[in-house]
Length: 395
Image (cartoon, rainbow, N blue to C red; front, side, top):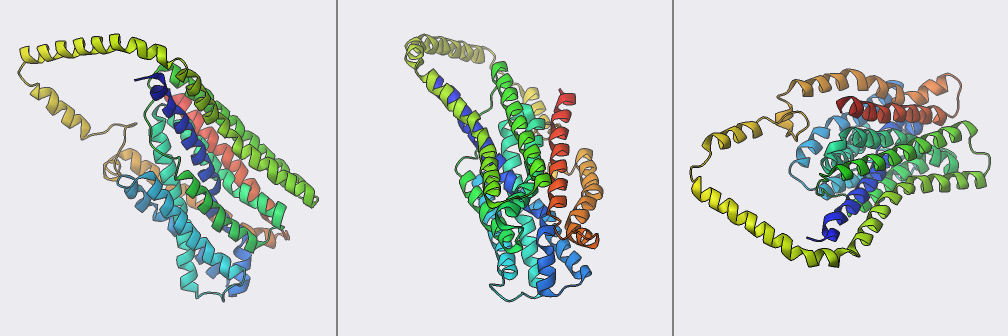
């Protein structure tokens, strides 16, 4: 095997991670309900209680994320991404048709179904991205989860600030963004997000750490950039357009990592002929080793039954850090600790974000997008810090 075959998977692995970052940067649309909830309330003539129930239907969609988890053990990553993309296209597309008044407002129960579909779509995207990337970077699970979940937190601010800059917080334009952009990004990620071989050398592990540091820096820069725009606001159309262009450049900048990996592989290919000339010696050594192993097997003909049984027992009980099926995870205390923590803790934040529009209007603020954006940005800092800190203490 030449150097090209040995190192080229790294470039594809990092390109897959960049596409995963982009998917996460558009998959936090479940937290954007406040940006268009007032328009739905007005068009459908809803009471505050009925509007709250709509937001509950949206959040129930995330509760069906168990389906995406079960599917991840049986379906390839591209299929899971496509399911999320199509479901989001339908769920948010119908909401856009209603808010833009392309169609008459649907019956209340039908709107609940489409909001539930929109909420559930993100679980397929998140599952595909997190499962694949954690399997690709097993030695850096903390940074991977911190970066990816951090971009989910930034997603709300990205959508909110782009809509504010280009469309003056128009709820119909906001919903068409939630409909089209995630679908297009997921279709792109389908071609690049794959499980790849693991890096086992110390040098490769150090290189991964350096690259994750770059991703962290870029994410923090994006967060502060969004934070600055939130306080400055849109002064004129040119300024808003420049803001969006710079933001897109920042989001595309992580591409430098896979480009560098591909360039490094290309340089190594130039030395491949020298390696291939030495390969016959390596093949001879490998053959000699194999023959010696066969002789040992003939001498020690008794099968190691006890060892095989021990291996079977070990495989039936995966430890923390190894892959678990959903049913294996449900037999551990760690799973239920996380389940109860999410059950008690996450709902409070969602309740505040879902009602942020009504809270802002009650306090006399006509535009609540700044509050939605700020919650998103500070949530990002908590997510990305938790991933890095947890990995530090684990190591």
